[in-house]
Image 1 (cartoon, rainbow, N blue to C red):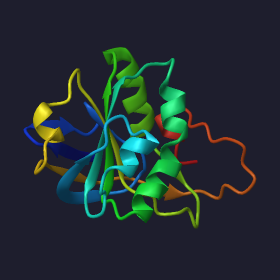
Image 2 (cartoon, rainbow, N blue to C red):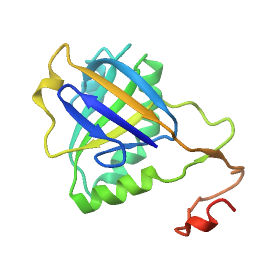
Image 3 (cartoon, helix red, strand yellow):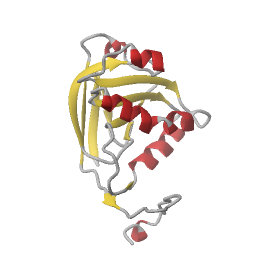
Length: 171
């Protein structure tokens, strides 16, 4: 998989300082709807139709990542139902933790048959979000291609744990 995400003047590279939550190719360009930290009140105050929603999650580490990640699917569905084009979450994480997250998100993903087509969701990591992207008129571009997916029969599966031996992954 390769790609880049451009937020105003800043560019993030897929697999380095950007990671895709769902496994699929994405090509989206549009205006940014800045939704702060993504609270219900902040999201209700923003017109997301035809826009790329940007949220600034601030410091993210092991103490709060599961809370942020756990609600991602519902957030993607709500934003898609309201006409959003994509979701970008800005995170500020330590390099070691980001490396773990990007490695996990960059790996092979199980895709269940009939799985809903969720809104594209991207995580970007940097110490600070550029002020230019929260102003009216700011735009974003997401271009990710070469995503590898494979459909796995997952009926009644409690968990999917991919091993680390590359030679055994296709078995």
